[in-house]
Image 1 (cartoon, helix red, strand yellow):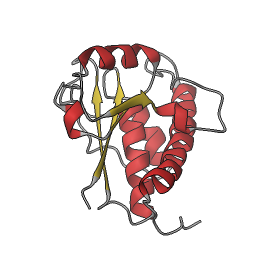
Image 2: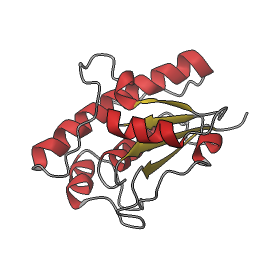
Image 3: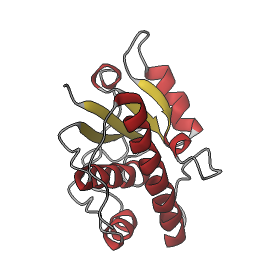
Amino acid sequence: MPKLRVLMVCMGNICRSPMAHGVLEQRLRERGLQDVVEVDSAGTHGYHIGSGPDPRAREEARGRGYDISHLRARQLGREDFDEFDYILVMDEANERIARQLQPEGSRARLQRFPEYAVDRPETEVPDPYYGGGEGFVHVMDLVEAASDGLLEHFAREHDIHGRPQQG
């Protein structure tokens, strides 16, 4: 069975999308699904290409047991829409940019990542870049919830099941 490929997208690929990337990747490893689902992240803008995640994002991730220090920012490209099954954006602005870039007939399902956080009212993952540390805590709470919802979706829609999470 070919791998299901997921791309997390925010503006600069140094805060929200690497946090979501790290959470989903860890959740997949915990369930033994790392060989079934592949995760990557990108930004709609090229501001930070080649840079690692924001130190505040790395700190919040590390505090919850996720290592995102190895990730490097890259920019979303037209080719991503044929290479990924899911392109999950963090907010309306990035969704609008991604839709303009998406080639007609491409295979990727483009949608907002918070749609999978079914028990949360947010429709966007807010950008914490210009705020304090509490914004990164909120983002992490939201991406953890959305990652869990996405895994439930994979189980239902793609028959991808892993071993139960150790807790």
